[in-house]
Amino acid sequence: MDDYKTEYDPEWVLATLNDAKEALENLIAYVEDNPDAVKETLDDGIQDVYAKLNYAYNSAKDGPEALMTMDDDDLVAFPIMLPFKHGVDVTRE
Picture 1 (cartoon, rainbow, N blue to C red):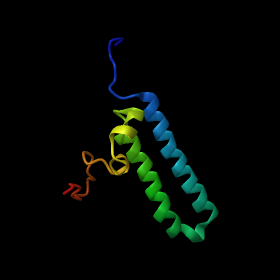
Picture 2: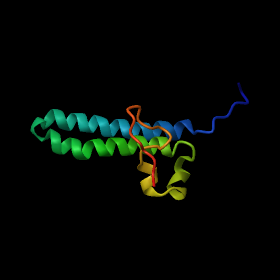
Picture 3: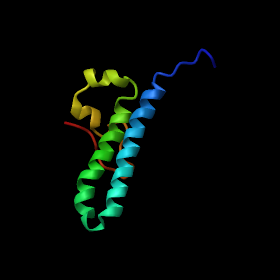
Picture 4: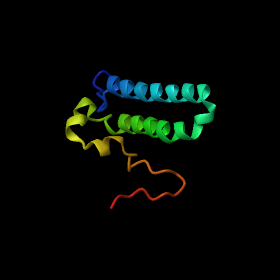
């Protein structure tokens, strides 16, 4: 087991996942404090949470270097290799 080396940087993955967790916690707190603004809050807040989750997944292999090697839109896009189970076609043209 000592020779095993993961191709992912656990510290990077944890840092980016914790960033997504913080965004979700902030969204939850805002909705709790502003129940009348749920729609507006979700429209922006959910996008932020998903972008951070997608960033965590998309940059997991390259770590911080992904910022230099990947397009910003690709960093925060839903991973193509993880299609939703409900049949949505996520292929890009």
